[in-house]
Length: 308
Image (cartoon, rainbow, N blue to C red):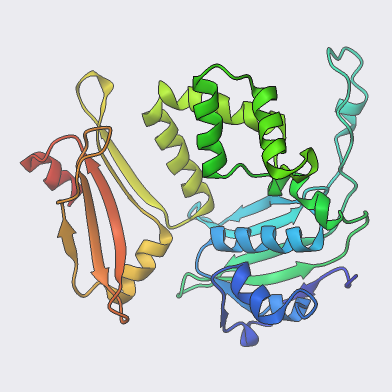
């Protein structure tokens, strides 16, 4: 247990952290204290979210994104990541009488655990401004953590296995039994049958609407990354013809290493038959860093004018 919250001292916030693995690997779980976390900085909100999710996994609870705050220019300047059991279920849902289904199990218990990050003016980095490590519920055992909501995951290999078995007519319950047999028991499968049904539903949605799924994905990134920039152009028949995107990390690379910009349109076509155009540079370690990416329907004069 820790106290109800600790505010960060910005004079100490000079620790650049790229994610949970670096810090946890350096300090270990036992050595990771609130004062260490309050000294951390992240280049993007996604890295902060990944860190807190990994931290919650090690501690034995599930995490989710909480409240966000915007400034007068409608830019996100503050994120809060909380325990999944934060808050309480509204009374109107508990007292509703004309329900067609039974109430779901009430899991919210007002847990106070959270991590808040704010954007630093000038650098654009995100620092931890508040960290609370106070739980009012039991934490999950190590062997049960994988079943918590934010930690359940189907790997790409397992998705490929699921897809190939469905193509030959095997049902989801039988596929789930197959995974359990391979891993040595149902208790070792890190996802549920419902997760498999959700993956199938997701695949069906992508088959007839890849463009809409892409736009929704980029919109989601823009909500979590205040510096995310993306544009698309629709041609005849309301078909997507050009798409460009560049996230906050790309902007940061460009601000530091943008003296020379390479324009590479030599990438091979993909299953959508669209050329991929990459804007890139080289950092101080002679490594390639990407500033922006685009997909065009045809390599025409007009398309490249639009991209540039």
